[in-house]
Length: 258
Image (cartoon, rainbow, N blue to C red; front, top):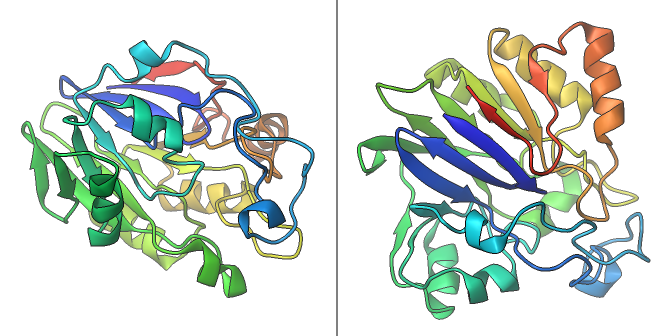
């Protein structure tokens, strides 16, 4: 397989001969207001910086040249207005539930399928997994999310965890599927007075302890205003823990063949 980090949680996965675009955010740098009061959220860092904070590392034509799209959920930093405009309306689209299917159907998409625990696409098994998008009061705002496990006889098992913190649901996925590659959203994004919405350093260390032989790829970093964990700090942390060979921290545009 080949995994290419695009920007934020947007990645392109080539798996068993098919290409998947996951969580497409395709707008130009600085298109949207920062996450915070302007969007109905609590205060967060960098209220003077519009999202995305960085430009796409490659052309949109290259990014959308795929066989299917997977939307783990429809927050603005995972499926944006530009993606609704740009993506072909007949492209195969996988979503987590009826609500997301309706929203994308209303946007004109015509080939939408809700992920299940036994979905197949072109011989590739796709298993919808649970996620917990934060803890405490912020869960009322953050809503439902999912991840997905990819499985095929010719490939290693891949687990795209989506927007989740470390909790027992992630442990259960690892125990059940024994993924050899795990992609985590790792920017420790949060609002000023809330618990983190996605994984930080300690969460990633727990993932490693649960799957010590897996390669872990850290996505969702430094691209929207409420991030609190930098790539540099994560790299220092995994160096200190002696797990730098297990935890990969890609730059935007970087890819791995695994």
